[in-house]
Length: 90
Image 1 (cartoon, one colour):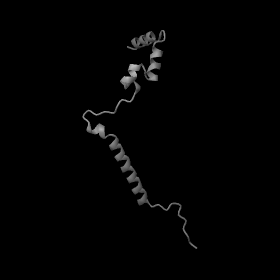
Image 2 (cartoon, one colour):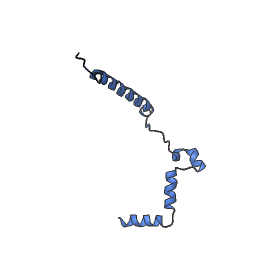
Image 3 (cartoon, helix red, strand yellow):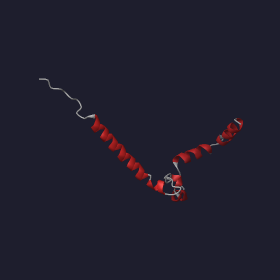
């Protein structure tokens, strides 16, 4: 009884075929996602940030990170220390 035990019955050609098909599918998906940007003259990704939405700005809704930065800068002494450190570095 000389039976051989194969842990993996997939050969290299089948693996390469599967990988190439996967890469091709991913490339097609990326091309379709970027089609509007590629076709449009001066095309760019849409601004999905909160500050880029005019309706949100009109309502006074801002990005949490921007609000946090503004709150930190509005603390007494912060603006002066930033200005002093910036002028001393020159």
